[in-house]
Image (cartoon, rainbow, N blue to C red; front, side, top):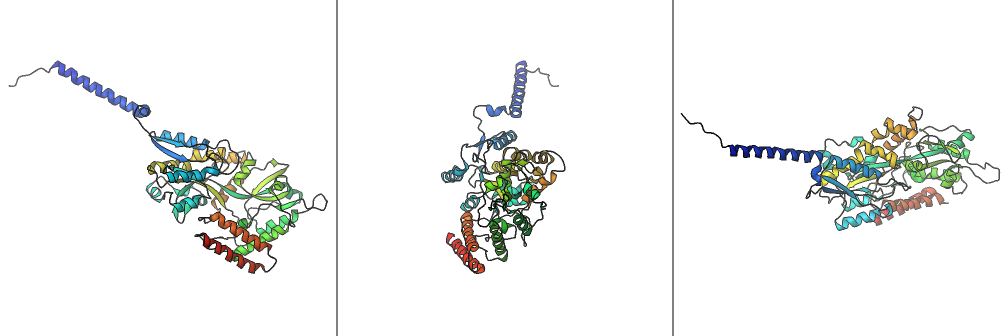
Length: 453
């Protein structure tokens, strides 16, 4: 039979003490992780994401809250991702922003993600400094492009590649001096109105109201040939920007219509100031411009002695009641070392409902998520009251964004439009055969486009 031996009491005490110490250490470690306290320990280094942003409003109006949405988003994002710190450089105005961003790229210090203005998006895409987002979208089961307005989402696409996500946007709407229509006994047109409705009303309201022999009330200001083209199904340039289509019958109809509209003013150049003074019936305006004037957009309130209302743009004979959209996008640097986390931050800024809702509070644009724009909470913000009477204005805004024209953009697009504008002015001012002049000017623009390649 074997003999029973007693355990060494010293060894038993040491074993117990070791286990107790290990348990205490593990509990401390769990507490540090759960409370995020470990982030404050010496040697802990968070990963840093940098965001490129400008200090003033994209919509060129004064705004004292330019960083508020971004800072709120950063706070929420860092809370969800304890190992990440998000930084941005403040004080860069929009006018200098693209130059600053280009310099950062040349130095190899580009932000991981950055806001891209509409006029510079094609240039950055062509330069190869934007990350193709397709791999991230395909692998991310939580991402759904259908949540964004289709037109706003398309703004981040260049030559078939999705380089950016939309952040905020603004459609162009037709704002109406309702008081002029009322005093002239003219019914407010509906949202399915046409060029001919527009022309007829402008003709009826253009007059000398005080009898001094000078016209002092006008039909419209700021309605351009581009507005006419958009609403008549005209695509001015091909996708590559090497061919212009001023000779298209729909384009010629648009130029002719602008000529008729301008003739109503008898050579007088109407200014936006005239509209603000209450002397003009119609003015197309970005929704962001309207918000700069009004505390409750889309509600009908007194301003400068007259009542406002808004409509979709009038439709041409071959088009629809649509206009173009301006969109601020968010892109990822092709040189970022933290692409996965950069993608998560892009999604948060553009796809989080709370962050997108703040655009109505701290900016002048429109959120890019239909569910946010059409929510009951934001319906109340836009109309000033949660009542069904004012609700159609909200959905007018939402539909105007969704159905907006997506204009093909390319390198030097703005310069091409300037050349086309000169061509249109020459056609309108031509005293000879307008069709012949249109052919001549179209050739000039095409020659210019080829020289820019």
